[in-house]
Structures are given as structure tokens and as C-alpha cells.
Image (tube, rainbow, N blue to C red; front, top):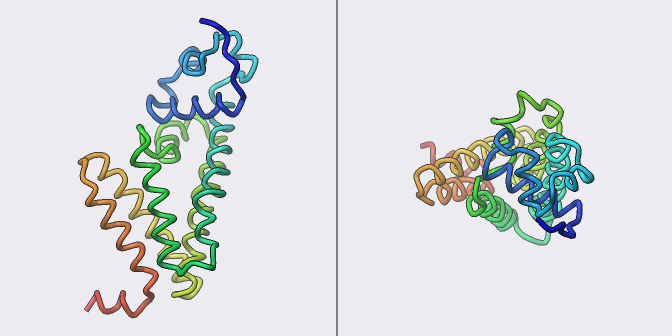
Length: 195
């Protein structure tokens, strides 16, 4: 195999995709070198272990989400409903249209018990997502109510992503997105639905 010119960031991205599609434990260093077009010996020049690649990949992914997805929540020029819808549509599109689904959920279920060092990175992504949702919801709720509803949205969206992938029906995610956007209407709309 000819030696390829590839950046460290490109290696991380390709390896994260491999983890997403084939699993962390099922991916060997040889597999990772191959997806990057590198010989195994050359690959060790960049990274010494899968754990190191995973940590760097989660940091890269966290930065991407913060800059390109969660940042939408803080654009006060848009109304809350539009921010909520835009942010969640962009997030769910990534999770549904990338083979393998949500890397955070995958790593949390597969590798967290054997790689405890990644827990703070996974928590950081979740906390940033929660903070973005909470920020949008604070225009309609008290701080505590916004915090609770933000966690509900994350639970609803993650469950809907899993069910959409499992059953191949976009109805699950469409309904979760609609419910999440409706939270922006505040207590009045929510109370009316319960009656």
C-alpha cells in the first residue's frame, strides 16, 4: 500500500467514522491504518493507541457540534421556535444520515466501561447540548423548568433517532421534533394539551 499524505485531523475523522460504523472494540489499529490509507507502522507515527484516537475524535466532534449546531441556539436574531427547529433538524440529520448513528451514544454504550477517560468528553457534549436547549427555553420558562424540559428533549430526540433507525420510519423523529419545537410555546400550550 503506498504511503498517503494525510493530516492528523483527517486521520481522526476517518477513524471516528470507522468507530461509528464498525464499533470501537471491533476496530483494530490495522483497520484504522487501512481506512486512512496508511501502513500500520506509519500509522503509529500519528497515534499510539485507539484510546488516543477516540479521545481526539470526541474533542474534534465536540468542537464541531459547538460551532455548527449548538451555536444556533444563541442566535438571538431568530425567534426561539426557529432556533429550536433549525438546531434539532441539523443535529438529527447528522445522526440519521451518517451510517452508524450517534457516535456519543455508540461510545457511551460500547466503550465507556472499558475507556473511562472518555466519560468527561461525552458529558461535555451532552452538557453543551443541554445548555443550548435550556438557553432557548428560558424565554418561555423559569430557569428550573427550562432545565427539566431541555433534558426531556434530549431524551425524546435520542429515543426517536434510535426508533427511526430501527424501524426505518421518520415518523418517530418528526414527532419528537414537533414536540420539542412546541415547548417554545411555554406553559399555556402545554397545560392546554393536558386538559
